Length: 261
Picture 1: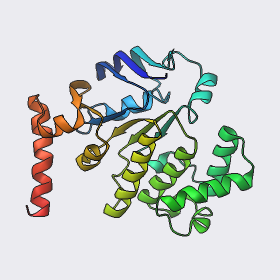
Picture 2: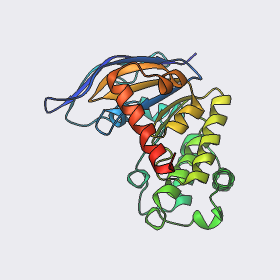
Picture 3: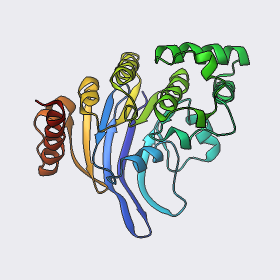
Picture 4: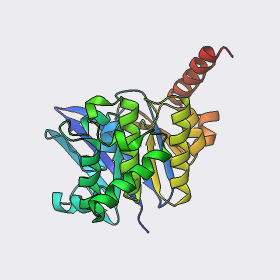
């Protein structure tokens, strides 16, 4: 049974602490929500989980998955893990896509290398998943280049690709940040479906409605530190730390003010 086990993870760059003594465990098939303000270390943590390390970073601690320390495996081993076992959906999809390749080229390249499918199978698989995420006229979208698409559309296209790989662990960094209400509901439905398939999820989000829907466990981060952890439903109602109270209550107040409640 694969589980994620992070032990005393510390990261610094140019003597500045980015992550400080982070430890938690995510059993197979469970969901972890990570919340915190910008600069709290959330994205650095998620990138380390897929083997993306800053060149000048000083890293200590362990990240165990499938009984291997992900901080110590080779790039060749990462090629076996990345996508197949662990998939990552970036907050900034434009940085992930090659601007000289259209969507079809990205999908075919990914699915052929990871799933061993024919070109026709790759295209059909991608179109089928795009329809689930309300991407209209997917055949035409497949011919588009990244710069021709909105951030929200690219985010859903990236979801379509990663889901088809059937990873054991999916990491989603702000998966609904660029989406309207209707498409947020579609992505939420997709993530809940993955939960039902026993896929482990790590979701970084400022969307507390999404966090509430997915439930599971939650951790609060601030300035690279893990401030508080517990059950999502309990913590969203009654955070124990002063920072947790400030963060969550401020978010609720802002939402109520916008909605005129």
